[in-house]
Length: 122
Image (cartoon, rainbow, N blue to C red; front, side, top):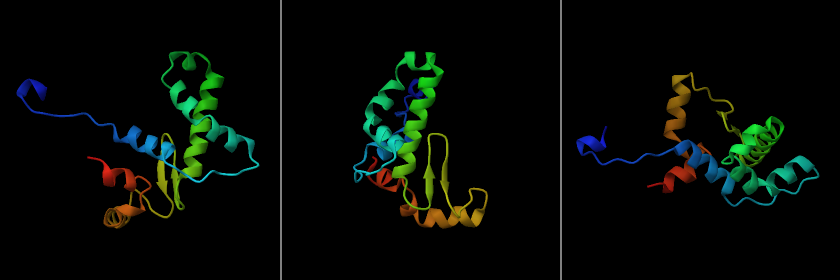
């Protein structure tokens, strides 16, 4: 509709861009005796690519593993006091239902794990 009326526009999926930013940013190697965490980091690129493959959705067990592995990486790269996942973002101690909390976080955007992404996004 916008294009039909001569309005220049672009589409932006900041949700996926923000998640990919967290998944792909340089983080210290997590040395863990936890095989799940090690495997999740090692297979990160493969897991992200497989989300684009229709065959993944034909095998529910494989799909669940990929989603859980991506969630594991997100949980490990999430800054303290936050929990980032494919379907949720939570800042411990703050509620999206409290106006005071929303105002507080709006005044300190650097507390968001996505702040480095949004700061440089044009």
